[in-house]
Image (cartoon, rainbow, N blue to C red; front, side):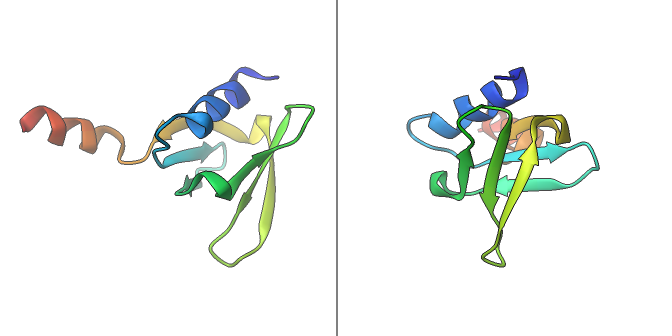
Length: 82
């Protein structure tokens, strides 16, 4: 399993689940809002997700540049300010 898929898996399996984003190499940002919106292939090199249009798309590990908790840096700044 690739390192990026391990990172995706860690956020996906976190309890409690918190939304996160897959930032793709082409610049797109895919928000995984619910745990059941993402799945992983058994060989660990690809994931699939449900789109808002009720379709499923497959991503190869090489397409994912990074994963980040939803809210990003702005959320961290708001928490520090509180």
